[in-house]
Length: 79
Image (cartoon, rainbow, N blue to C red; front, side, top):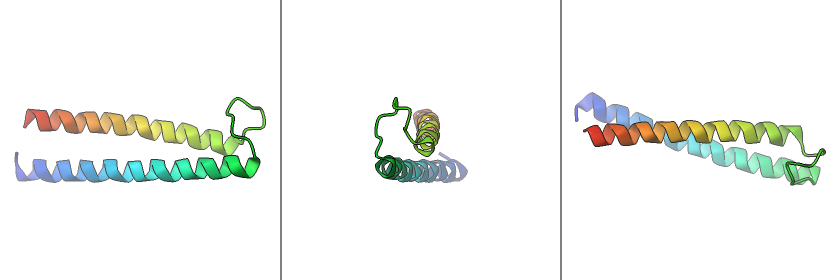
């Protein structure tokens, strides 16, 4: 593996780690918003809109992380 390839892999690993950290923050924010509203069931009409939006953003991040992790695996297998 070239020096630039190793540096790119490290940056990708750092990005994935940062995104997982953000997912954990969002999970905490979702739990706090649910507790504040006293509604924990997403199907309830009174479920907080902020928690719904955070869930959607979190799910998108998790999907993105999956794509990035797959890319990292493909790179390491090719090396």
